Length: 242
Length: 242
DNA sequence: CGTAGCGTTGAAGAGTATCAAAGAATGTGG
DNA sequence: CCACATTCTTTGATACTCTTCAACGCTACG
Image: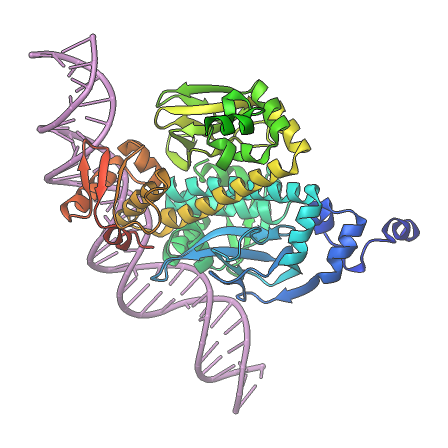
């Protein structure tokens, strides 16, 4: 078993051998030579929750694959009001190609593990590999679909529906095991109440009250503020406004 | 002059010769042969305001370039609440590649002129032309940036700021002549009050009241419900939250 | 003229934000 | 291991924004 793996992997960079991004992320678009080339300039590293990865109006110098943890993408108004405009889970690609300056902030929501490569390396590789550009297009379209779904939530749902929708999103997004049609789900919230509020366009207090209500109604159970148990996903879905 | 044009255009399909999409739209990525191939299967047509172009959960059979007018992309909840999740102006590309079913509705907001081609033609061309895929990626990223900007508006701005932001968006988006830093602007709203409300996540009445307030405060003038004059863009910007 | 669609205005009410305080959870140094 | 400080969360009272419901005005059109 181990031997056969070795045979197949003899020309795959050590860095990449156990990397999820190689299968489901953008790196899956690269052949062995390209992967080797990219691996030479790439670095794996970890950051703590709360650390900023990319600042608004900052020059973009690198791109990353999210290997573990959750990254939140935020935008702010001049007076400090903040909105989370995207959440990235492994193995999402983090970065905005073809722009010099970032229009958003990226911050580690949990402790995060990343594989980063310089902008130049990626852009060179994009030119060389249509397959890579295809992956990037797929990722961009996926994020666009998600953003548009979320616009409906932000614009048209009540606070109660927003919180239920958020729990559903996390339940299905954080662990592919909790798939679309699972009857129950158990997960840890990757965000604080403040982050959830920024994601939903609500205040901390309203989020808290809605969670309390869901708990009081027996739709969810919460332990240690973060750990959530949903026994009956259908009941939660009914509260999400669909 | 006319002769030289002819020389340059002798191999450009008649259909495409005066088309804006050939310069600024996705067709700009195609060489003469590819353009000729695509033009054979493409059709120009016009639709009236209110007509549906693509239905939610409908099979995607064609893609289009918007040549004139405004197309609104909407999503709805099961109880009828609706949210506009995107507006497309010429020469935007309309359609979601790599999906069998549409997740959104597309409807003509004004009378619209389109150039449509069958799904198969585009997908064949994407495979053949990395440059086309590159354009599609650029367009997807542009729409993603817009969607995220709008999420901040939906989630964190007040009704007054939302309406001001909308007017700014239309002023700069509808006519490139009203560019970013113009001092004044004149334009026709491409949307009804109901559409504006669906775009901003508000009710018709609130939109109307906020417009009235902007008018009362001398920030805008409105004629015939649709025609808007902004003498001082800075004043409008100050009310948009930014 | 009468009707239909779109927009405006007013009054009342619901939903969410704001302000304030207290209760958990987490970490720190004694 | 415990007292303490800090941060995060919950809960309550009040204020305000926006929605809802209702009526009316304007314009186009048969």
